[in-house]
Length: 103
Image 1 (cartoon, one colour):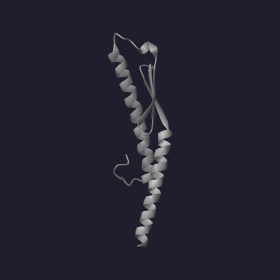
Image 2 (image 1 turned 180 degrees about the vertical axis):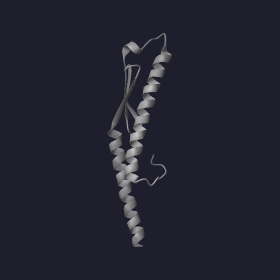
Image 3 (image 1 turned 180 degrees about the horizontal axis):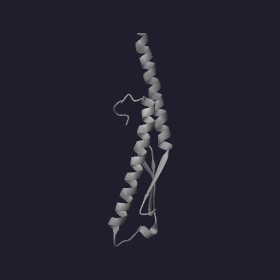
C-alpha cells in the first residue's frame, strides 16, 4: 500500500506542477509578423491569440486576399512558436514520460 500511496502523491504533485505550468504559459506570449510588419500577432503559449494589429496601409479593398494571407501567415507562425514553448515547458514537468493529452 505504501508504494501506491507514494505513487498517488507523485501523481498529485505532477498534476499541481502541470496546472501551475499551464497557468504560467497562459500569461507568456510570443509575437509574429508578416508583410514586413504590416500584420502583427501576439499569441499566448496556451495556444490562444492575444492581439492582432494591422497597419491601415495593408488594407486594400481591391485585394482582400493579400490581407487574409498576411494574417494567416502571422497567426500560424505565432501559434507554432507557442506550441513549441508549450511542448518544451510541459516536457520539463512530465520529465519525458510522454503522457497522452498533455501536448
